[in-house]
Length: 81
Image 1 (spheres, helix red, strand yellow):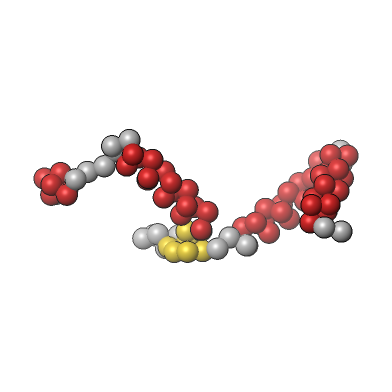
Image 2 (tube, rainbow, N blue to C red):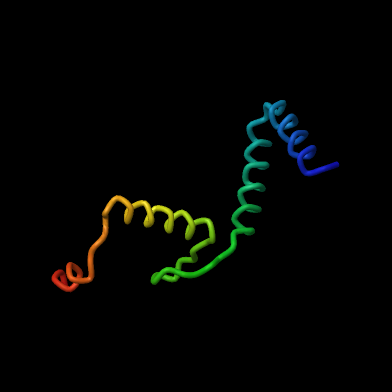
């Protein structure tokens, strides 16, 4: 069975389940799997890990801020210090 077929079948099973406790167990299992498979690419100054997904999200947000003109020049930074 292919991955696409497995996903389809799993979706069908989950759509049919009415037991909230069972759904919470499945959710917890999937959440743990996702968290354990996150690639850690660095650490913040407070030693909190940064995952690849978090880094990409932050970089995209920073890039958008730069495009909107939300940045300081070196001269402005020197004046603030």
